[in-house]
Length: 322
Ligand SMILES: C[S@@+](CC[C@H](N)C(=O)[O-])C[C@H]1O[C@@H](n2cnc3c(N)ncnc32)[C@H](O)[C@@H]1O
Image (cartoon, rainbow, N blue to C red):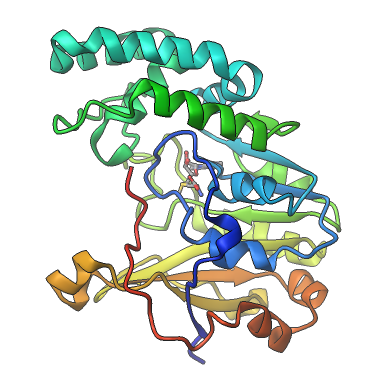
């Protein structure tokens, strides 16, 4: 059966959600569909493939949950998150110093910061690299060294704007627990009232030799972990596969898991309109049976997503510009 198609409608309540740093694959746009799927009585959101933790930041910003746990296998990224939560002001000072020092020769300065980051893994260097690298896409070489190039058209977010972002994100995320490591420990710690949002790297970008992520993710192991979570009545929401034009990334998860499968249409971007249908993206979203039950069953889920369900696509940009 073809999954119901949901076209993302923007929620006014999420208009001013902050984001600390650009990150390829950020789910800021999907927050408009995902947040309404978090039941009112949810104390805690767990986000074990956090990246820029767009869903947790949005959920905490509108107080949809009391607290969050975020984790990621990328250790320096979680060190950056700790720094945002514990001392955003010093981090903003360091960023301002790096940003200003680069002005004489931005190209060679970027290379110098890359070297310093690879030697020390310090968060201010990572923040600067994220702000300046191509497509905000984290890339590592075989030795685990950051090797993404700079986007020479931009100098990165200006210090005043970065300071504001760090402050607002830190405020929204007050009380958040930050963990480094693979997703399993966080998923296993989920309690019945929690909601877990998972956004793993898609199949095809998950093997270790792929430079997009620091660690691979075995599909079969992941499916077993999902089956165990379903059995434990864990409420989870999962972004997994999708289609852009005729190109499919990831194969849909097996029906035997009993998940509610939705298709999200992020809208046809103005870019896509110029380039033709090849750039339209449809993303899958899967809901666990325990979550569907908490929300009142499948018809209730579709009713929650109204006015997004069965609506014509928005003319808006689907992807998250850095
Ligand atoms: C698509 S990105 C998540 C983006 C995130 N939703 C956001 O809003 O920015 C996937 C993330 O999973 C992380 N990752 C890859 N393998 C992992 C694993 N085995 N356990 C935990 N995190 C992992 C990557 O480092 C990356 O940050």
